[in-house]
Every structure is written in structure tokens, then in C-alpha cells.
Length: 188
Image (tube, rainbow, N blue to C red; front, side):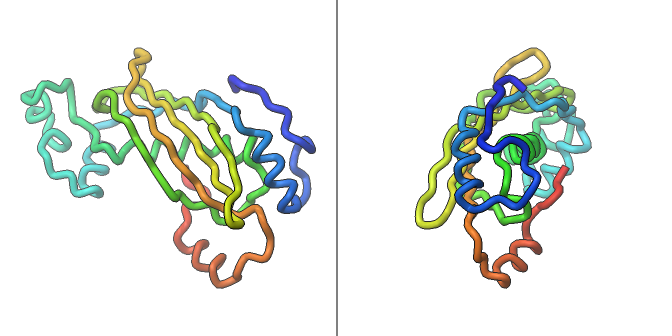
């Protein structure tokens, strides 16, 4: 990891109080790292994401159409960066933002700046930054920033994600059950 932090209380070995979760999360602001695994952008993944996101432009499906448009290979639809972000965030919640466990944390806002297209054949590196934490109306707001580069270090995407969760206790069991059905726990 590129930024070591000393989170209050050391490793989590027991259930934390809401105050302890909030204090540990606030102390982790500034934590950042380069995600250990690179992501290879295959033609198959580009086509899958294009199909799933209903991106019908031939540059996402046909290599010759992409080359005719001036690209080296198939162009990934913009939404593809979100999968990379989900995967790269796992260490953040395992090492820095701890104590939420299976409490729901949902994305409440997403902003992205696309610097250059992601193209099949690239190998991507993701740098994850934990930029901000605050509490408002009983909700914990966590802001992360992902910087995605290609194998040559060229900047491709910078994205900012605001996540909303509750470090507090007393969640409504019906809400927790509903979240269990829609959340992507264990996504890889």
C-alpha cells in the first residue's frame, strides 16, 4: 500500500460500536493504494459490456469498424470502468474502512472524467483514494476517487464515488433483508 495509516484500535476482532466505526473511518481519510491486480481488457468483455449497456455503436462490437473510426481495437463502453472500481475497492473496505461488515453501503453519487477511451488489449491499473468522510442525518458519506491508467501510465478515467451507509445500530430488518437481495456482496 502506498499510504500506511494507523486506524484507532488496531485490527478489528470484534463487533464495533457505531462511534468506533465512525472514528476508524474518519481516521482512514487519505488512505490510498494501487490495486494489486491489473485488469486486462479483452474483446469479449468489451462486447459483453456493450451488450449489457445497450451500446450498439459498431466500435464496441466490430474490430474493423473500430479501426475505421481510428481506434486500435474495440472501444469499451464508458460504463465498463465501474466494474474495475468495484473490484479495486475491496481492499479499501477490508483494510481501511472497517466495521461495516454486512451493513449496507450503497452508491449515492458517481462522477467520471474520461481522459481517453479504454480499448481492448489494454492492461489497466487502478489507484484508489479515500478522499472524504462525513456524517449527515444519521448517514455516513464516504467519498472515493479512482484513477485508471493503461499499461504505459496514460490517464484514462478519473472517477469519484460517494457511498452512503450507516455505522449506527438499529437498522430496520426489512430494509436489511431488501438490501441483501440487491447488494453485490462478495463481488469480484
